[in-house]
Length: 374
Image (cartoon, rainbow, N blue to C red; front, side):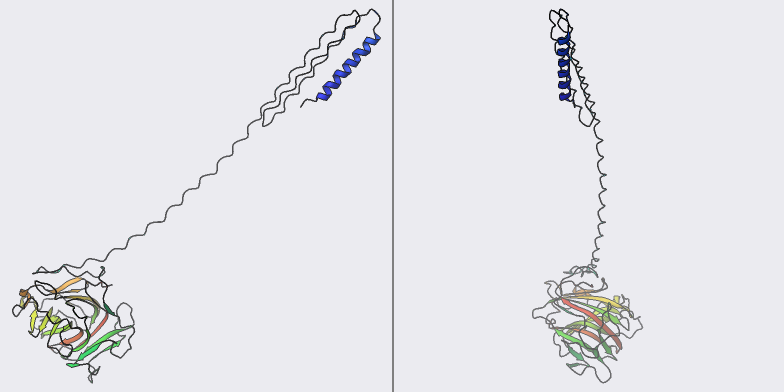
């Protein structure tokens, strides 16, 4: 920046010098006045902002005319200061690198639904098959996994029908009985119920059904020591019961018995003692194999206006059905042939061919709609 006090001081000295010269001039001499020197403006300092223009130099003071002398020359104007160089603009900072958006987590694969059960065989008033193993089902109104029971005792909450006696000693003297043990259990459970039959006598556990029941789904996991549905034509099979309905838990006079008929999976009804399927299907399978657990689902439908029906599935596959009068071997039964049978359910083993067997059952369920094998 220009120092104005310095300029003013120079000008004052100039005027003083002029005065001294005037005082020393001879009389009659004309002294020429010295023009004031204009101070050159200082160039603006270069910087970020434009430099400030240099101050304009003060005009030279007009020389005082000497006595009779020529007027002093007017001083030249000071040189205009050069404008300061505009400062270089600062480099604009580079923007931060934009972060790469994180990839979204992979979407989990939706669980596959269980396979739908095979539809029931076509018949008069036939209904669709029960939901296959793994499919969704109706919530059961009763279940029992036998986990809270005691080894060597009858499961709690059940009645028995053993050797044609109701609520009798369990087991019998020959070992026939239905007791909880851990020999063969389903799906890593601790306990299951073991039905031991040494001959032809019935070994059943029974449970009452809700009043008014006329359509029931039974689900149970079964382990057999002797397979069912695999006897050849030369076999001595008559019929065996694995589970069913009873109209009177104290005897075997009114029952719907699901199991084996003449070497094939089938049904026996008493008091008529009629059997299904018909002879053309005997000794031909399908088979419920031994040595491994199978999920059995059996539907007893006594509600149909057309014809009462039975459908049975093993591991989701239809293995037996009664949907019409023509399905009976010994003549047609009436449409309401299950009437009066829904008093109780039974599970266990009985052979009318005196076939001994050991059967384990686990994870049992009763419901009014198709039940899942899960």
